Length: 186
Image (cartoon, rainbow, N blue to C red; front, side, top):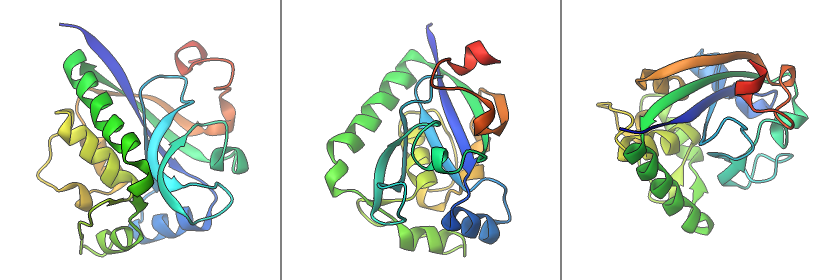
């Protein structure tokens, strides 16, 4: 059986929204992104479309040396490598492709973000927040097993994903992702 790696990137930037989420959850990391490789130049999540503005927000591509992360170079992050089968990986790629193909119809679930932190989750069609998206594609790819629905999942709930290894915890500006992959730095 062949295996591949995917990466879960938990972060907390210096944005007001990130601080607000951390304040409400009492957790250090307010955001989660999904990367299919260790260059972290194309991560998938739901967040700001324009890094300088909170709205509009929706399905986005992020990377660790541009956008919001470049605006806040001392952003904290926690990176896990997750070992998956080739079948799970291919299923995940297909799940992400569904989001990419429907990108223009997808919106950031501001209401859902607010409600989940008060234990009142609400599913809205075509609306997602970061951990709702990441958990949904992982669940649908048989990578993450949980009794919770995606709209109930907070970023750090994804620490329950199995077959993971912590590969980095620290400040984003301490690594140079533009010229090296994480595996060559550590």
